[in-house]
Image 1 (cartoon, each protein chain N blue to C red):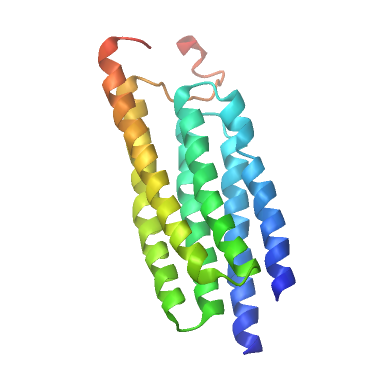
Image 2: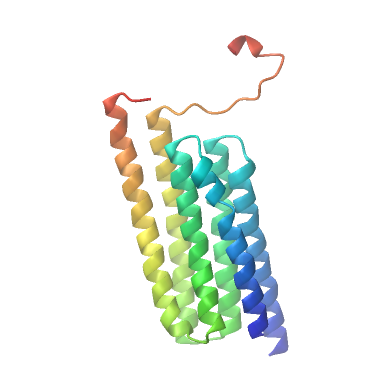
Length: 91
Length: 108
């Protein structure tokens, strides 16, 4: 049963590495921000899986909750900043 | 007990599949709006399924209650973040992508 979570962690690491292409080569700023949000969402699942690998779920769940709140607030803050960027007239 | 672990493995694997679909859609789709469409829903469903599988694996403890809290929180906040980013893109003036057919090539 522990080996299943090790395999799941490896697969999740590969899944996290895929959106880095969009962060590096994104045509606009929004693509990069979307990729960063996707990486944060998948990293939450990876932290949960690491907690199940090491049998310390009670500690890693709190880390996951804090990471989810930080990811959400970061994305909302960047989106609000990009809303104010319209008035400067840059395309 | 074995059935419980088997069901948890099945649900977690389904969630990992949806996370993979969201990643591939983020790379392969042609436009920002299409990419947001792909990753905003597939990632939410994937995280919800993985967390649900871990709740099934954990049983009925305090940890599973916290996992259910994470499930509800992600289900609320991930579409909200995608919606805010998409609204910022529309206000910014980002044009959606159209297929270049022979019928409407007068658009350029």
